[in-house]
Length: 289
Image 1 (cartoon, helix red, strand yellow):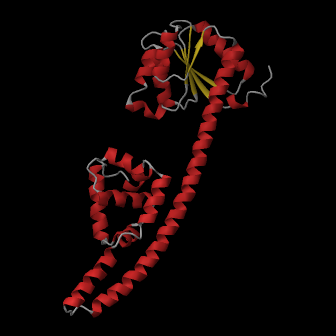
Image 2: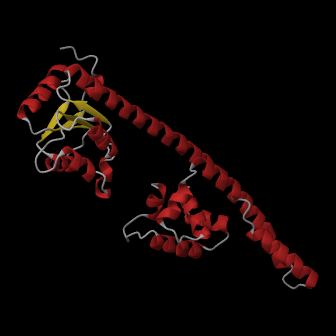
Image 3: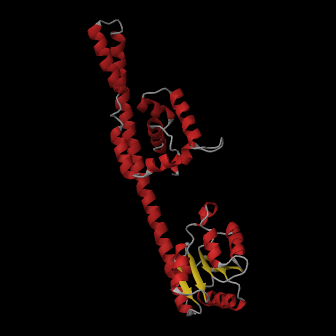
């Protein structure tokens, strides 16, 4: 059989959950003829399917409905649990001769299957469905990678902008602090001037353009963070955004006009509110949200 039209199957691993030996042999023979480099793994029921997925990387699951111990629908329901989140992006095709009416189809799709084939499907149709699904998965991965690259470039530009802000801020504060030192011995008028200088030193508008750009790049980031830690304060949220932007503690202290010790204390409070373990990296956690 020609294989040049089946490159999408080359090197892929497909897990077949099927308890009927005749159907297993037929599927193995199908791939042996059309795509011999596709690796086929076999499970006799849903539980074996879970056991295999815990040990092997799988590109697609072809799932029978009627199986002992754990049937196809039970497996789909089990995979909805949080502990199986790493398997979320594995496409699952229900392939069954039982429970084939539209209500069962709707139930399978509701619990995470992305396609439904009735046995016995012509081999060419089975291959076409699998190829189409794998192509779509590959395209989605490429799109995700492209989006990640764009975000990385945007973040790099934001970091550059922040560094420019730091230079401006450092120069401004240097001048204001020199002026402040000259008028420590003040009259009432000078006291008013001193308050104005303090307001300038503590002004926050230098970083607001960055925040606006960050929100355009990651519109849901702060909302997601607040869902994880509902009691996070606005100041802590601002610090988390700057950590996400890959700024070091010294730069963050300059931008927020706080001490390095203040940054350290705020980082500790954020860790507590995120319920992170001692060995968990705050920076890594915030970057992966």
